[in-house]
Structures are given as structure tokens and as C-alpha cells.
Image (tube, rainbow, N blue to C red; front, side, top):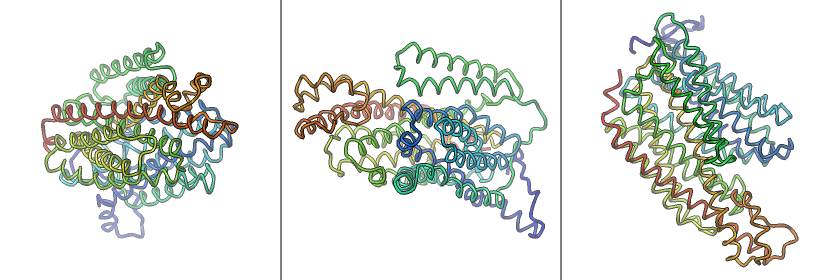
Length: 529
């Protein structure tokens, strides 16, 4: 273990032999097991909430804007505090802040279920996001401190696998709970997982932190970074509503970027910065941060419109849709350790572009999807996407955290998690905006082509927002033939939007592959010290 990391073996149970307990706390695989519980809880929560949102809206009489804030409040709080959470762990103890994060996340989850109002749900979702920001970066921080360099890549592969499995299980678990229990149970399920995580963590996690002595905490840096991230992410999540070329969106994003530039300048002027700019001297770390954002742009953006397609266009229930996307999940699970091994042996310059190319292939294959495509046309892109995502997740995590000194492991974990969240937010916002735009420009023509009378087309064209979510604007009093024509035309317009979103995603992934090949020029092993 490098000298910059101290391991605290204090507070051991009196009845246990000290040597045995020290051995247990020094076991890196037990550390990985402990952090997996917290990571699983956050990953599961992130994907079950989207399934619960419609039922939350009906039960609490929430508007569409309210439901957007159920997601946005969490996202804003998480993005604003991720690097802070990693820095606090590096300085004051990664185990401590990981466990605080787990406890707070669990308590906030229960509070959401008990709140009884949409305002309470939104408020506690923000609290949940803050504690998630304490939890997530310290999972990677503790792995970086616990594992020797040669085994860190495999640990990250398993970390990525746990993250993939939990995210993939969300739609299935969420669908079952919402259909057979209640929407509140989607949040209550975090309670037993959180308790197990706390118990296991208390028993096996060693304390690790950066031994830098006493120095002033970078409070101005915290404020500048939090404010900049809040403004940027707010601009991203509102871009679809305001319009990406509107003055409000451009002004908000520009303001956020300016604040972040000031933050970066300030960080180079002080002795103990919140985010050391020297980290970006590593090409692998810098490119890994960019590719992480592209990876989750593709993953979360594609999953968003795939779920709309499967549920609203094809008519599957949430559980049925979740089962049909299992190839994506299973492929991601398989690819994570493979990506870690490839990165360990050949470096991220091979594994990152390979993963990006697989995702590009998946996106381009979706250009062949139609309203009535058989499942044989759906599952191959799911597998390619899952393989690409799993490979890139392992490779980029290793490139970012593995290329940071151990003393900055928590900050690097926060940087990776921030990039992930911004990429995911951009993916869902930008792709649904592209789908909406394409639906708006083609709906009239598709309805006419499907046989809807011209006198009705204009009125139905006003329902483009619903069609952009895959919902056909039909009513109970429509004749059967007209209803079928409206469903067909609306489905075709939605698929036009899906094809546009798929094309943009594929091109972006190709660019990501080029950036990875050109930008990553050295093996991550050389930076591990």
C-alpha cells in the first residue's frame, strides 16, 4: 500500500483476535464485496424510478413537470456534490463517508415512500442524490486504495458488472413491485439492501484516507464547482423543454460553463485544491472522462427510447419490456470483466475504442427497426450495445481512477461519476429532443400515408408531444379502421424519430472511438504509483 494511504484498524471488536480482524479488514476482495451492496442499491434505484413515475403521478396527482423534477432533483444534487463526496472521503476517510452515504441514501428512500405528497417525494429525492454523491465516488476510491495495481483492473471490471446488473434489473424489479405491491415499495426495497451494506461495511471495510496533514478545506472551490454543475445540469435537463437553440438554454449552459472555467482557473492558484488540475496531465484519465460521458449518453439515451418503443408502440408491460432487454444486461455483465482484462493487458487504447465501435454498430443496426419488427431484429443490437457499454465502463473507470494517485482516488471516482451523470442526462434530453423534432416534421405525412382523412390530420398533429413518447392519439369513439390508421401513422412517425436518434448516437460513438485511439497513448500501468 502506498505511503499516501493510511489504514485504520481501530475500533475492532474486543472479543475477536486482533490479527484475524486485521486480516479481514485488509482483504481487498471483502472490500469489493462491501462496496458492491451500496453500488447495487444506487444502480437499482436509478432505473426503478422511471418505472414508478406514472403510478406516482396518478397516486399523488402530479403533473408531468412534477414528475420531471422527481428525476431532476436527484440528478442536480448528485452532480453538484460528487467531487465533493470524493474529496471528503480522501481527506477524512473513505469508509466513513461511504457509510454515511449508504445510511443517508437508505433513510431518504424510506422517507420518499412515507412522504405522501409530490413535494415530499421531490425534496427527499434531492436528499437521496446528495447522499448518493457521498457514496458513489468512495466505492472506487476504496478499491483504488485496497487493490494492488495489477489486480485493480479486474476489481473495476467486477465493479462495472455490479453496476450493470443493478441498472438492468431495475425495470424488471420495478415493474413487478409497481404492478403487485405499490410505487412506494420501489423505494422501500432500498432499506434491507442498505442495512446489509452497513453491517457488512462495518465488519470488513478498512479506513483509508490521504495523509496530507492539516490544511484549509477549499470552500470557494466547493461553491464554484457545485454552482457550475447545478447550472450546467439544469440547462441540460431543461434543454428539451426550452429548445436547444433557445436563449434560455444557451444562456444557462454558457453561464454554467463560465463558472466551471473560473473554478478550473481558481484551482490552479491554490495549494490544496478540491480538484487538482494536474490529474488532467494524464491523457488516459482525460480521455477516459470524455468517453465515460459518451458511454452513458448512448446507454441511458438508447434505453430511454427503447423502453418507450417496447411499452407504448409495441404494447408490452414494464416487466415484459424489461425481460426483452435482458440480452443487453447479460452482455454488459459478460463484457465488464473482459474489458478489464483487455485494458490490463493492452491498455485502454484498445478496449475503449472497441467498446465504442460495438455501441456504434448497435445504434446503426437500430436504423432497420420498424413499428412491427420481430424480436429477431431487436436482440442483436441489444447484445452489441451491452458488450460495448460493459467494455467501456470497465476500461474508462480503470483509465480514470487507475491513472490518479491513490491519494486522489476519491476525487477521481467523483470525476468519473460526474462525467457519467452529465453524459446520461445529455443522452436522455438530447435524444428525446431529436425524436420530438422529427415527429413534429413527419407526423402529418405519416398519418396521411396511413389513410387518416385529411380533415382529421391537422387536429391529430397537435398531439405530437404524445406521439414523441410513442403514444398514439386515439380515443374510444374512433371507428376501428380509423384507430388502426392513427396507430400505424403515429408509430411510423415515432420510428422516424428513433432512426434520427440512433444515427446521431452511432456517429457520436464513432467519434468517441477515434478520440480514444488518438488521445490515449500510453498504458495505464505506467501511471499507477
